[in-house]
Length: 178
Image (cartoon, rainbow, N blue to C red; front, top):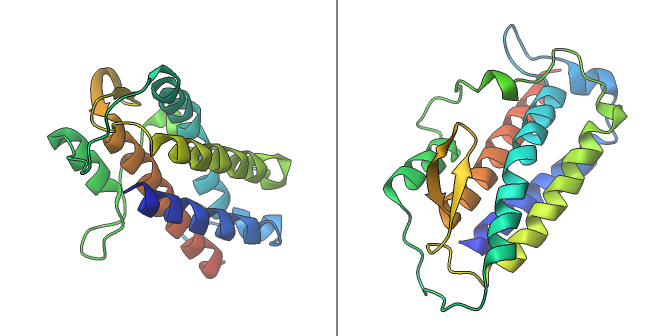
């Protein structure tokens, strides 16, 4: 599982690195009414990183030597959330987001948003390396919609990475349409 998540992060990083060569206008162009531009997708992901990177770091910092389970078994709720983010051609792409995670309409992508995204993505990738030595089912994290709901650590990692993959694809579509 960790290998798959790291591959998605690497692919996302390569795409975002390429976007640094594109004009700000192209990155800020919305593909249609009510659809996000690539810059808005990146800002949205940055807002989620602000919540999830500390949660992931907390688990990694607080885990000690433990026996690893050879096969990770997702939780029911966590599996639902992770799979709801996973790209799938048979399921609608549009989803509602929390107002606090909605990006601004006009963004200055050259003013650090893309660099912030790449830095956070590198941090996540490093955390995934460390997570490979942790029992992914033995620890829990809060989720952004409610601190009362806790997911298995492995489900949180899947949710976060699949969420990135979803919005990278959305950003790619916006760039192609611009």
